Image (cartoon, rainbow, N blue to C red; front, side, top):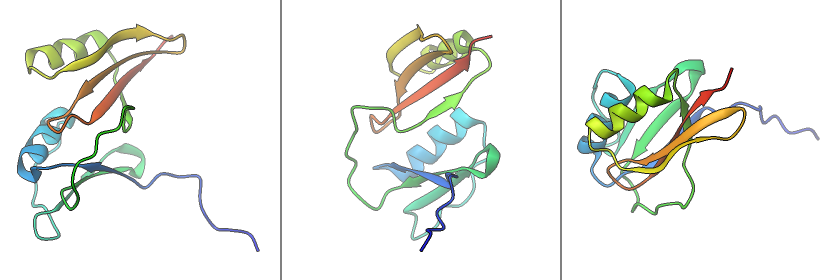
Length: 121
């Protein structure tokens, strides 16, 4: 019997300790309007392009990974870096050119790692 799993990501869960702080932080980062959280103020969804959702999840204790949870694209990694510095967001891997991409990593308020990538021409 063939499985019916599609090669398509629907959502990425991000563990958070303070849902309100994380909603404000992620909505500012992603230029998304703040709306009401759900599930007794424990879940918050942010819709991205291509029908992918980031779900902020305050249901479980935060356990940080040594790797980024996901990466987001940017059109200008240097401007993104300036934004992070201006907003006192901790950069943990400064801009690196890995050939096909330029990347940098930073932390959210719960020390979750996030990566930003710019495609090289």
